Image (tube, rainbow, N blue to C red; front, side):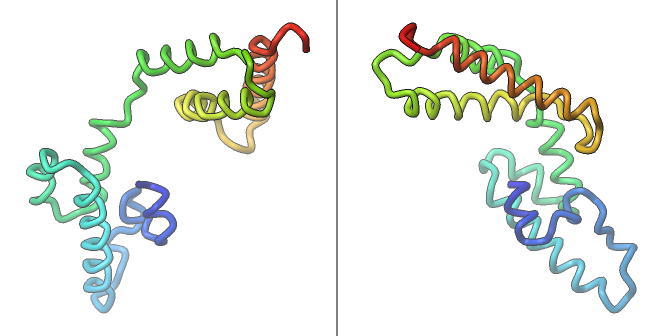
Amino acid sequence: MRIVILSRNKLGFIDDTCKKENYGINLVDLWECCNAIVLSWLMNCVSPKLLSGMVYSSNASAIWDDLKERFDKVDCSRSFQIHKEITFASQGTSLISTYFSKLRVPWAEFYSLAPILGYDCAKSREFVQFMERQKLLQFLMGLNESY
């Protein structure tokens, strides 16, 4: 959902950087219109059971924060399942390219759950290099003995 909002240049309405009070009287109506659009996107993307708590909110940022508090949790059981899937993956009778493609999906999901340091930080680059080495080792562990 965040990607969709970002692509429509409305991220400020959910990360609270685009506040109504930052705009003059002439632009408040435009802000209200854009906020309503983002609210409708959010409401159309959740299950009907969640709508009852959202329909009374007039601020997209407040709804986003509420959804984030409820659902933006790292589920250890899911992390465990993904890690297990990666650990026990093997090439078997597959081509190397097929085996590698099979690993890409769980890698992407697993690393999306990993905490990321700042992008310009030296420690962040070290962490990314470490994770890339981990992926290489996991890939090599599942290759057939002939390789």
